[in-house]
Length: 155
Image 1 (cartoon, rainbow, N blue to C red):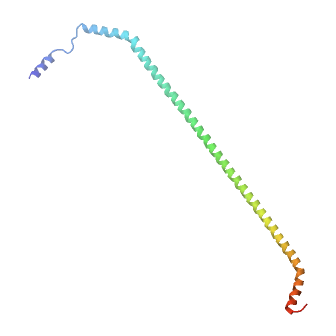
Image 2 (image 1 turned 90 degrees about the vertical axis):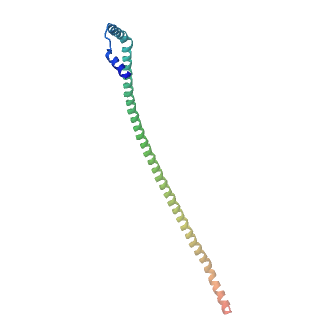
Image 3 (image 1 turned 30 degrees about the vertical axis):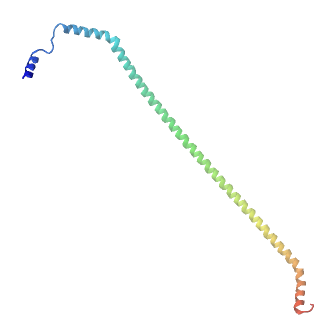
């Protein structure tokens, strides 16, 4: 019950007394506004505006630098691809030249081996012919000797 009685007493008094001090408070407020406007509010607002402009400028510069970096990266990629293609071409050319050189060496070796084989055949034929000629004279004498031995008398 006591609580409801305090509530009734509190509700009967006005919340704000509007007397002469309100004009004094309004005057102090306006005076502080006039003093603080050039000393505090205006510099703070200017600093805030400069900061926002600096941030916006930094963002624009960052975008410009990002674009430049993307261009440099694209240029780098193009140059790297060209270098890879050139290196691949050089490797292919070297491989083809090596293969051609190898084939030339193999052909030269085959040709040389063929020549040597032909020379060996010719030499064998010549030696066989000279051996035949050398033995041809001996064949007659051997035939007479063999016939004499078989017959048991001189032929």
